[in-house]
Amino acid sequence: MKLKAAPAHKDVAIIDASTAILREMTELASSLRYATVLTDDGFEVVSVPTHKADGRLASMASSVQALSEAVARELEIGDAPYVIIASEAGHVIQLRVPGHELVLAALFDVAETLGKALSTSRLAAEKLATALTSR
Amino acid sequence: MSPESGLVAGSRETVSPPPELTGWAGAATAIHALQQMAMPMTLTLDVAEHGPITIDFPFHAFSWDTPFAEFPHDPTSVLVETRPANPEQPTIALPGRPLDSLLWMIGYTAFGDRPAPWLREGDRYRLRRWPALADIAVTLDQVRMTAMLGNAFATADELAAAAHTPPADARRLVNAFSVTGILRRSTGAAALELPAAAPAAEASTGLFSRLRERFGH
Amino acid sequence: MEHIILFAGPMGAGKTTAIRTLSDIEVVSTEAANTDREQSDKDTTTVALDYGEISITDEEKVRLYGIPGQRRFEFMWRILRERAEGMVLLVHIDAPDAVASVREFIIEFFDLVERGGVVVGITRSDMAPGPTITDFTDALELQLPELMVPVMLVDPRDRGHMELLLMTLVANIETRAAFGATLETEYSA
Picture 1 (cartoon, rainbow over the protein chains, first blue to last red):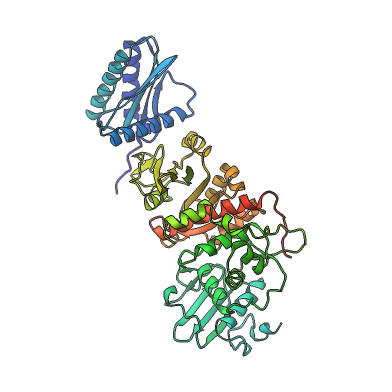
Picture 2 (picture 1 turned 180 degrees about the horizontal axis):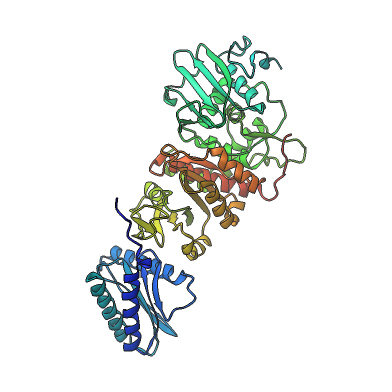
């Protein structure tokens, strides 16, 4: 008899590791307004700061990620693109957590440069990947 | 009504229909009569040279070894046997074959180009639901007529006129729907009727006709 | 000229398969790893949309959009339904409460239902026990006594079935449009 593993968004170890990484992100970048880790299929693992979660943002982020990857596949420009939604009052960065079925999404103040926002996010995603792999 | 003379609920009987109702006509008449009864029933049709069909009405399924591709249009005999059914207990191995297809085929075939004897001249009918006919090769004209009868009351002749099909095709279709048990009859003069026949040109400009061509029918 | 047809229904009903069967092009899909094994034991699930198309001519296409079945993706439903001409609702017969599922989607997409723009395909009926076709249509008749929503048993892998489902949808839309407004609630005794 094999026990089913808890889904990622209910796995305490994943929640803890994600929370730690997101908190670190907010310390490193004062321009960070909001960050979240979500499963591939749109369930929120954790978000910082926590908000009245209706789960919609996580679902939308998973849709955006999947659509962007479909475009990238179609144009043959690579598997795991970053997604940047640049708007008047803020920038959203999304990218996969390498080697895991998770996505990290972060909202930065428009004052932050896109380059810094990207590198902050990428670093966090890589750290999370390492933390989860070495569990 | 004479077709009821041979059918006795509550006992197992082999029934001989009146001489003018042999073959599928007798079976169709028996099925129609059963549908008027409140009691759940099963029906066995012994089709000459094609084996027995067992129909379980409560479970809306039938069993028969003959595929529809080999459906006999004019069997020499169809013996009809009825039995009360237990709605909790199927008489055939489930899921069985979906019943609509069989009833539709019998209704379509049973009376040739004439209306079924219980359908009154001038009565308008409409579909209560769409027939579930996945295993039968229906024509797209039949799909169009089905859609029309799903949305308005009509006689078979009015249906044929609106759909630009031969009246015999519409009559067979109405017979098929009747035996499938999915017709309802209009009781009043104010029922929504099919609009007068649209000019043939209009029928060929819609998406339906273009898709039909694209799919190669 | 374009016509947009949605494919909706719960997870595991066969929407992605149905579009693959009908599409001229290779289907663009947005599958992600399925975390929700309680809902369905599939490995993947659609999180944005599936896209396929049928080219009628160089200038006329039928666009097929498969929308994710879970309610948390209803923002996608809203985005796509605005432009939809019709909808194919696929529900598998062995869904947890297949009849209730059909009713929920009918309520959700009632504006499409009203103009005849919804057909229901019940899948897997040859593979699993479940409600009969009349269970579905009786429930719909109770909910909508004046409207007939076509309900058919289909296999989403079968080209003939899928073509028939689509033709039925188009016939129903065109017929209702031609016949215009009010319907009589006449029933025989």
